[in-house]
Image (cartoon, rainbow, N blue to C red; front, side, top):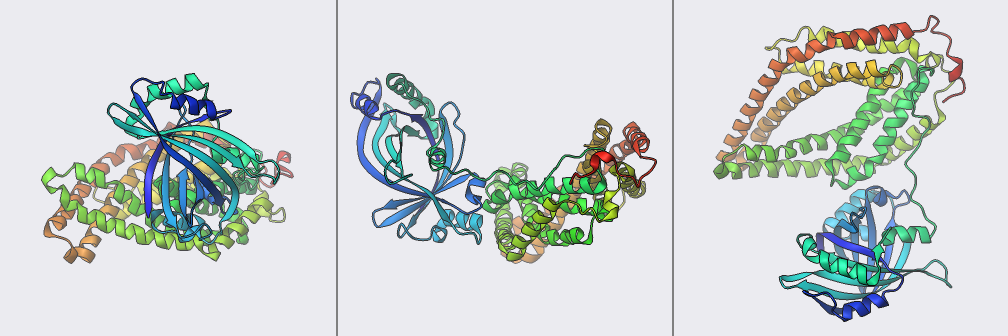
Length: 537
């Protein structure tokens, strides 16, 4: 048996639960009914992978013994707001307490397998709780449950750590109805909000600490640095973002984690392209390896974008025809599920594991001092890195007409993205406000071209779906696909009409100001690295 629910509860710390028990038994809150529901003995083991993937994804993993069986629970972590914690809870039955949690059925097992990959699960700590339960109701019906928990955390054989907690769990729709009762409970029993969850308290009691976010060396970019040092700082920052978003990408609940991981992958590869003349062949070899990861992430992300648009599509259809989109959404979800399986195969592979380990080691080692091109002052080469990409954008952009094919706009978008990345990598930490101001102009162009490209990607996707699955779809759904494709074509035309005014901004005062600054700061002798950069990696 599996289930998924939203847990909404007040959590309070107590020195002793007995005064709370006496207060509940006296029925002191007018308008409310409190009924005992018995006492439970709970034996919980919390687990995670050696690299704390579950915790980094924002969840805890618990196996609760239940007689001859057990129950797996994945629960999201959340800060308390006004004393209330709202957390997602996914549960599944296990045949025995020592059963492999990764073999659990349903959503809980699927999520755990996606998170862990080939990593094993290991116990973090154990909680043993005596729970006294009470139902809470008012005149309109049941509100939820009150739990008095006396918990021990085995730390040593002689002296376990003890916690006393009072929890009031209610339906989200019943919060306002339950609040007067909770206020009376707090006042009468002198309760305070629990500053930490049981999980957090147990980590402290057992002397454990989740690992700090990964660090691979300096990430700050400064004008005094060599180009090799700047390149490594940029790569370190993007690789850290890449790894931080991996657990959320694996879990698949928040599509923004996948988006951020994909963007970090793009920036890693873009940085290697921007700094290519100043990086060793060993470093540049990583670009192709990250390309495989980028393709796997991109396939899922593209489908996420199309699924996000379903609400927009449905809102634009007459109510009596909205059902025609159901077949399209079903096909997209089926494809996304298959793409996610392929993505997880890539992330679970030994090749990916080796890639991350080797890349981390190279970043920590820093740019090799024996590689002469990397020792060039960044101020000597940054103007060329930016100007070269600017000229490419202008060369392609000047040729664009309203009647140009979509491919021409797409090629310009790619070059605009390269220019934006170059500005981001060498501009923000070196040239300050002028770089940011011009980067905003490039971003505006890239955003417009991105929407234009998205429209044609959607058209191609709809046409491909119709061709590959046409026989499985009812005629009305095929007609709906045609309507959507025409709407995207019309949107692309609107974007083309806006292109000239957005593109003209690239030749404006922001570019001229940045160009003057870059040339003014270019050193007369590019061979001599600044003394301030010596020894920095």
